[in-house]
Image (cartoon, rainbow, N blue to C red; front, side, top):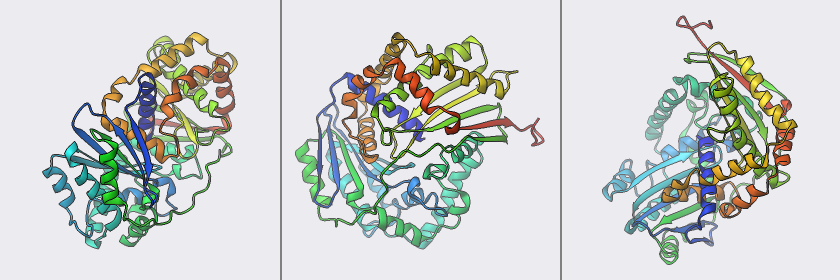
Length: 445
């Protein structure tokens, strides 16, 4: 999920660079709650998101997935709401609500017509200050989460393959365990653990409130102060400063799963914008991913899928917006008769070409133009704007990042793209997973 989100955000920020964004306001309450307000008066709707800077990378061994488990409980009991009240209120007033947990954050959102802004803020403030965890409700919800894990991962061979690949992609970090948690950990959760997690991380100073839509700064500030200003300024635990991790050495994994076709995963632990020694590396890696997989004219599609017909599908992505290091991923499925080893060699050959011969300036110009135009529709979505503001802020980046993206991409030289491939996509940073189908008897053919 995270990779798709980052890709979407990259597109969104690129598109936003082409047009001036609506007015955005940024202020912080005395208790530490940071508030971003995006005015978009095209329609009488409002989106409210409350993001907490806590996700699966913060979880210790034995408690993986606890952030996600707590997310479920945030729709249950509070001091003034019983299970079902929250959803009933949102539904009664025509709203929509849900939540999301990822490696680096947990977020909650509501969408209404603009007149319901006070309701949305009151509900979020209630959950932030007054959560109560009932033991029986908790036990039932553990079974819900276990079923969710079975449906989304354990009974989904592709998801299971990705989970096992991710476990070796950035070993020794919080990114190596699944956001939903390992099954053995979920089965042992206790209500006390969830409440302790809530008390440790859910505080105004560890949250970002985003309000986007048909709302003015004056309205947003008045209502935010009304519902959140009196909440105590609880301390937030210290976190280490993000630093670039040393190369972990090559890791390889061979899997036999009930998939229909074989597949290949290749990934490199690389710097993110947060950990890069030079921000130019982040933009060079973005362009590198675009050269390889920037649409129908990109090299992987042109050379390996349509050209040499070695793959039925293949792609490359750079996840460089993160609280810690990023990842560069290549995935592919071989054409019939092509081995995974041959496909891996062909992908490495494409990288070797870039390591030794920089792309042309014209090629980079095309990639940049595609990034800037690929997601214009994102800007029509108030929800998408709120996601961008919240995500960039919660991972410690400036939400104005979009304003400089066009120029930063234009500054990337062909030699920098080549150097990025040479410096970062090295064997000692690489993890490879080969996935082969089981036959009907459950054995590898």
